[in-house]
Amino acid sequence: MEVKTFTSRQFVGISTRTNNHHEQTEADGKIAQLWQTFYHDYASLLEDNATLYGIYSHYESDQHGDYNITVASDTSGLLEQVDNDSALQIYSFSGGRYLSFAAQGEMPQTAIRLWELVWRYFEQSDCPYQRAFGQDIEIYHQSNEVEIAISIV
Image 1 (cartoon, helix red, strand yellow):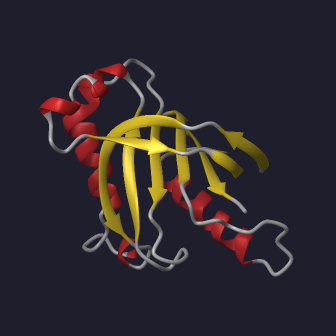
Image 2: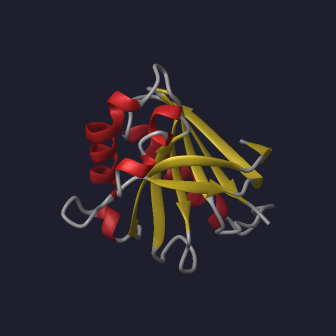
Image 3: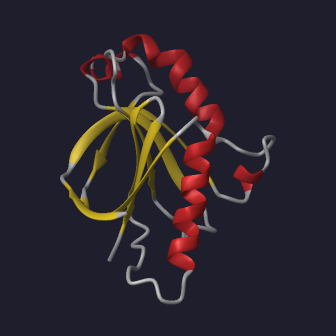
């Protein structure tokens, strides 16, 4: 884990609103379907080895409340399609100070386990950092490598 500063930037992607309680069951979960839709509808527009992002924002309260998730990339092929596809939106990421966690392994299991580690870390009474619940971001550097960066105060 490492403290990082991210700069602001723009992404293009699709979004939904959910919460962690709904994500516990396949019937109620929306995140897996959002990723499937993104791959199905937009994979052909991505550049080879494009970095993919899961951006968590508009938190209702904390990790137990509702939040938005945007599955996105910053490739020009997606940006060119924004005017032709009402589902695609430009998303502004404001950047800032983040605590970054990383893992390698089979997806999505590795990303799920990494989120569980993040939640446990911030629930510790002696945790030196406080979550801001601003914009958090998953960065898929490669097909088997994920970084989760949590906005901190």
